[in-house]
Image (tube, rainbow, N blue to C red; front, side, top):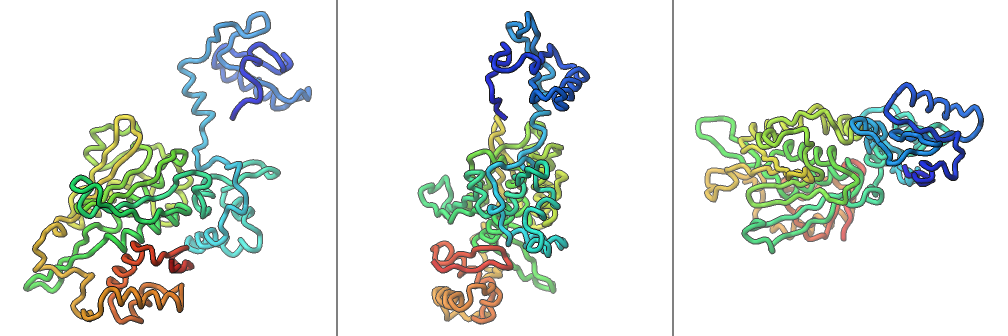
Length: 426
């Protein structure tokens, strides 16, 4: 917080009564705490005071040059910045910035009794019970964690808090000019996670089924296991620096998915451990309060289990390991998820992709399916994908492919939560 008076005026005891200024040559906690309590009690009703640490007094003013502090400086800085960003108050936020629908949806999803009290007691009272308000009762502010969870326009407070997805059909190296930018994903953190995963599920994730002779069960694998991708996306939001003007970037290549987030991996993690990509054991969590809410939604554990989970899901799917990269200054982290090798093979004669079921009519083109979906949405914009499949007599994967095409062509988008959202025809 900026001082309302210049440091030079304090050092020379100008504009402020001298009995309201105390100089401390070094870091002596007992002496300093005594002065803090004296100014806080303000028995003389002078309006508190100023304590300047690392300043020696000479002839009633600060001795020059100012000595300052050395080894204690880090401790002092850590004390002033003790509260992480998500636990700090946001002085620009108001009750109107909190979405009642998102708040109630979250409380219902976590089976909290507070869900029924939002309309009865009000948003601020419920946020206070959730420990999402900061300050004394007479002057409370909404915390950044509350905005991250329940604000539909989070980018108004933290610019570029969004997800940008780009597809390179031929690869970013082979043909970098051939790319497709998908609509930017914005909203609260849970909304962005859900919409990002829905987009990846509709546009990217595929299942391959191989029938094996003399074996009842077929071999099933995905080009990218859903849980591995979700873990990377959640980590990108969990560990994000919300003060950086950088989007979360997702690049879809023919042979991998690349997810770039800011900042990089904490400096306490050695480069050797990052290259191994097994487990990053750090006890520093940038947005611990946000992590607690993501844990309630079963999206995060917060115990350095993210990397092992990613690698385990890939290993169980038969996929290569994920790779992690960061620059020397730890400004960004890049995660590359390789595609399953079977999806790179040109010979698919032994495989039956799930998104092309044998019992599905082949006479009806994908364009007609898309047209019928538009008609169904006109009749009911809350219709689910499964209801579309039932009404049109086709598989759910066919509906997903058609919706993916409609989204890419920006003819149809889905807004809101998975339960209370709706389709919008462009």
